[in-house]
Image 1 (spheres, rainbow, N blue to C red):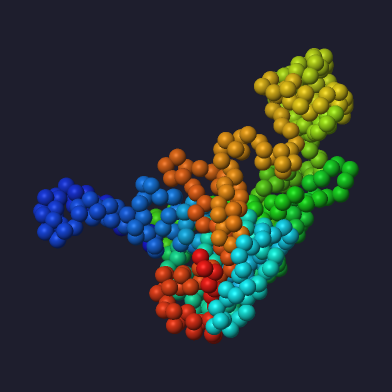
Image 2 (image 1 turned 60 degrees about the vertical axis):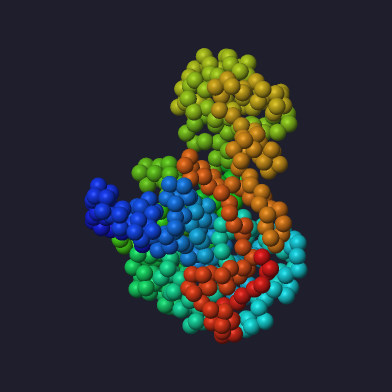
Length: 484
C-alpha cells in the first residue's frame, strides 16, 4: 500500500545513492542475471505502490491502474461512483446478491436480449438458486456497471462475511451504500474492516449521512430532491414542483463520493493511513443548490420556480419558434446587444427599460414578450442561422435523437460500441473526461451476474476449486459457467 511521506523520502534517498554508486551494484546484478533497468523500475514503482501495484507501468497505464475497489453498492449513486473509478483504471469487484444480483438488473423494460441460452449456467453445487431473467440484461443496470467484475456473495452467511474481509484485506477502496449500521451489524463496517487493512479508504453513501436524527432512515433520489429543496425550485412558474428528468441527486452524490475517495487516496500517500468517507444524498443536494441556498441563508430570500428562466439574468430562457424551441443565454450587455441586432430589434438597445441587466429584470415580462413575438415569426433553423456566430449564447432544445446526432458528440468519440458476450454489440456513453498521457478506455462490458466469482476467488484469494464448490454448497456464494 502507499508509503508514508517519510518512507517515501527515505526510499528516494536510497534510490539516489543506488544510482550514483551503481558500478559495483551492476556487477552484482549481472552476475545474477538481473537487468539493472528492471531493478530501478521496480524500485520506482514501489514508491507509489498500493496493495496490488506490482507490474504497473506508471507512465503509461491509466491513472488508477493497480488500485482495487471492493464495490458493495447497488442501484445508482454507488455504482456510478465505482464506474468512474473503473474508467480511471481501478480494478472494481462488484459484490452482488447471489440470487437476484443488483436491484437494477430487474429494472425494465427496456432490456437487451440475450444472444445465447443462459438457462443452465448456474453451478449445480449452488445451494442458492439464482434467478434467470429471460428478458435479458436491463438497460438501467448496463448504464452504470462497465469496467467491473461481478462476484456473488451472501452477506448474511458467515462464510460470505469472511470472504469480504479477505477481499478487503487486499483492496484499497470499499464503497457501500447500505443503511448506516447495517454492515457494522454483520462485522463489515469501517471499524471492522480497518482491523484487517488500516490503509483502506472506506466510502459510505447514504441518504442522510452516518450521524443525526435521520441517519437510520433510507434515502432515495426522489425523496431527497423533494426534502432538500431541488424539487421545489424545479418546474414552470405556474405549475407544481417536479423531479429532474434523471436521478440527478444520485448522480451528483456518486461524483462527490468519487472525488472524496481520490482525495483520501492522495492523503494515504502522505500518511500511510486510510479513512472513512461519509457521503450523503442530502448533503450533496444541499451543496448543489449554490446561489439558491446562499440567497436564503444570508438574505432570507425564499426560492421559487422559474421554469427555464433565470432569477437574476434576463433574457435567459427558452423561447418558442414556429417549429421547435430555442434557448438564449444573455449574461451581459454585449450579448444582449448582439441578440437585439441579429433579430432586427435594434430599438431594444436604446430602450431605457433594458439598458442594464437590473433594468431588464425589472421589465422582464415586457422584454420577453417582444423577443418571443419575434421568434414566433421564424423557424428554429432560421433563428439558429440568424444568431449563430454573432456573439449570442444559444442552443436548440434537443431530444435524444437530435442529441446523439450532434456533430460534437461524434467528433469527440462520446459514444463507444463494445461487444458484450451475453447480448452482443452494445453502445455506451464514453468517459466524460480524457487524459493526454493516459487515455481512458472501456475494457470490460457490464458483467453478467457472478461472471467473475470463481476467477476472483481463485486469482486474488488463492481459493481452490474444492473450496469454491464448498462455499457454493454452503450458500456463501454462487458461481456460473457462462462459457466466456
